[in-house]
Length: 251
Image (cartoon, rainbow, N blue to C red; front, side, top):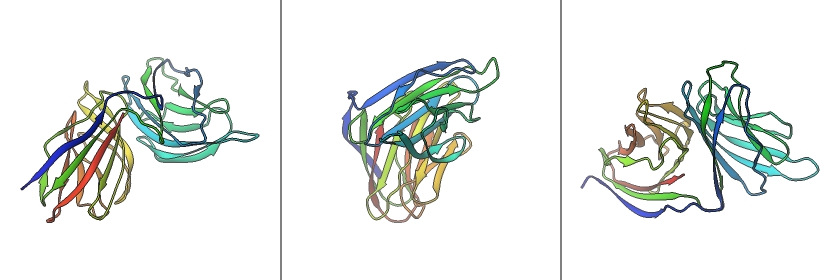
């Protein structure tokens, strides 16, 4: 029977729970403070798509309100892998958006974050996007249901946003689950980069064409989300048994 896909739901309208902020920074420059103050968790995902050391990252951010407003965060970026900490100061790195660690999302004044280019090179101009999504709300999204016989791969699945951060969540619903996010498509260099987590190996961060594997959708490394082309993904069932699950793109 092979493997087939059917799109179950697609919402192409941006909602108030999503904010996408483009940035363009010379070395030493920072954006204006960006409001990220909410007692509900916020997901921050960002890209650096300018010339040089491009990259991606995504963290869940929580604000603890009180006499001193403290940010707690946990996530993954392409440069460092796992990122987790808490801080109430100014200028504390939350995650890197490039592969060298020069473009950073940082804490700003209480309740705010900022993107800074800490590179000292006069040619290291940084450009990209930072997206804030309130986890409890809705943003642009599409969901795909898959059913897979053993030892088969899907047809290519288009990544829905060009160079802007995209979160890909996957769940294999037969028995095991996994999740991660893919946050950059670079048409100029024909490269996909990603950083995230799955239930089989933990941190997943890499780029094509160095590898095709992105994340596993099960605990046993049998259902594999892979790079198909520079603009498309595919799901491969490497087991001998049939399975079903979902992919959701949030962007």
